[in-house]
Length: 590
Image (cartoon, rainbow, N blue to C red; front, side, top):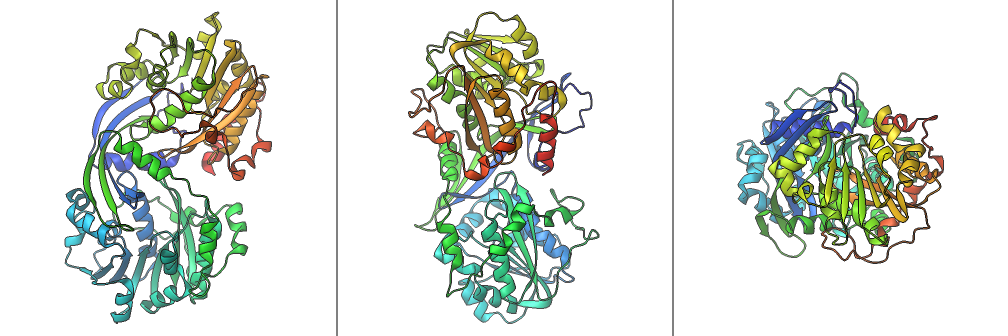
């Protein structure tokens, strides 16, 4: 933890700040706010509304503004006129809410692609509150029939067209991304009009992203492309298109109220060399040649939405709406979300902290031969203890956390104590408010399991807790058959940090196994197991109760080739060559 007195400094993802600012502007309750010698602490409770279509998350109220403001405002900033607007999709009125902020908008045509989603939005008061009653604005006209019916009957062109289309995952939805469909939309665009198309992620699916761009150009449209990080969904791509050449400049800024737009949007139009390098492979998608079908059939889908939905349904929740037939089923859920921010960096969300903590604890405790004594470094929130206490053969747990405020939260704040099931009050738990480096010097009796749940190496002080020397001292506290597990940031978003931590643990001479899991609030998150003896992958599910682990734990140890591609360039972090915090800052900027 940082010992800096400058609590305005920030060592985390900038989108934590954006998301926090949004939450503070909306309905929320501050459960606890305080300052320790080490960090600022903010505990919030908010209501989270989520809409699922065919069991896939469409949006959630925590960060939908980031997406919908990014979808709408660049097109409006770039367009000279926006009296007449066409919105395709957006059945919940969230893009419409942003459009109606512009007083010069005189007419909006809204064309729905999912009747059931529109019905859910119209019948759910909580959605009307989120879209700020946009459906009832007199400027809004709902089209009857399908999008094809609308395209055949409309005569007057539009200044702005917003196409919030379903992802091109099926043969039906892929037809929305064809040369022929884009030509039809082009005919409805004024000569100076701007169209924006929701696209694939340029980071995750660059070939699909650039193929949609190339298909727009094949319809005689000029394009300008951008992307935005939406915390719950990751990197989201968009295409601006018009009949004239489009160019973004530093002077382009929004003039309407918003929650998440940066001062200068120009950074959104910048792409990494890796993403740009795929552009030359792009293909045109047409009715005669649905090339995107092949690209999507080649993808391996991760059922993370289903996993998360099952997790939410197994915990306290309120179903606000449920209905529809096969192929167009909609579910709207409301859940309570308790979120802890340390120095404005998100530490946990009650919606998915269990995914993280089950992955942190159970692979190690499943594989180890004995579990009598356990040491937890960090983890003052008590969630790792909660998971460890599920094992009846655990006799003693030492929790070591530097910050007394964290220990107070976990022990005495009802919402947090309830979430950790009052773990710090268990007779088997000894709580030590001190530096782990001091604690380890004092210990003589070894541990069967050591769990390292320390903050990310965001500064030089924290970087010292991820050195070969630090891990070597911990290894000296392990029994001969013991296992150490260390949270190690994201192998997807910070791969150099992740593999460098693994390499630093290997520098102690221990055997290391690496694994990861998807945590919606944070993205893909990684861990390393280490032991004095070779580690063999678990092929069984833990025998104790859990909610989010796979049937076969060995699947957690499988990495895509893109994750492993940077492993050979990782850096061993030592006290004499302390660089992990610099790598961390570089990767966050990237």
